[in-house]
Length: 344
Image 1 (tube, rainbow, N blue to C red):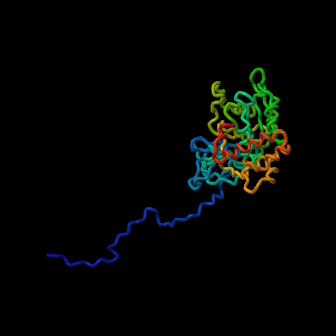
Image 2: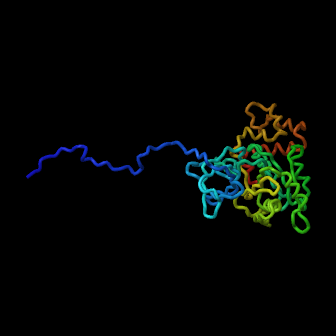
Image 3: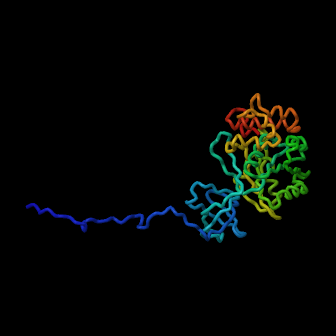
């Protein structure tokens, strides 16, 4: 016999509890007012080593940082266990505003820039005078990157016991770029007096060391910071290039004040992140000649005013070479063949 139909009411409805809890979601981020400020001195496989009140703290990045890069030299806000004891892990929740950012790209058309270091005062461009041969075009690129980052450049010329530095320095005559010259003794060690002159240039500064592999960068760092024992390598006799020994950037405290940030050897220094219209401003000996350029001048065309400027001697004895370097950079930046960033 069929059962009579039943009317349902709200008591018959079961409400499944939410798995996400009853609290409404919010986009407000925690202020972390109690966070402690430290300096990133090393990065290795998803862990950041930070210096905090004289001791090192291992930290991970908080999810809320998103895609924000965190590099050596950054000042960061830390929460969690900041004791630095073995097995402890703090959390980076904020990257403080930067005073300078040194960037590079893989080549001059690569849209993805790589932040190398932050908050550095000067860029030490380390170049061997021989073994491997110096590459002025690479130096020009590093100079542009330094000026664009708001850093002061410093030329550090190594292996002066093999070749006199005068010929190379002539490329930058009149540009007022400070430089240091380092040579080796008959025993193969670095000349102590030369190392002290470099140390004086680095005093109370945060200095980034950049250069090709095999130029003696890590050897110089070992002399400046006793006991650090950075790995060193040799130059390949066939290719004339050094083998990469440093694998990541690291900040090292100088005994008398200041920091050295040693970076892995580079074979290219792309400038895709630098606006082409700004590049001419980083060639101060040429910039005055743009007043006679036609509107929209690319500085690499028949009516360019820079040719007459250089011919008149206004750019000094290095004018011809510097103009050629500028135009190679501009062509490469525009994606034209002839001056890849690894051909310095």
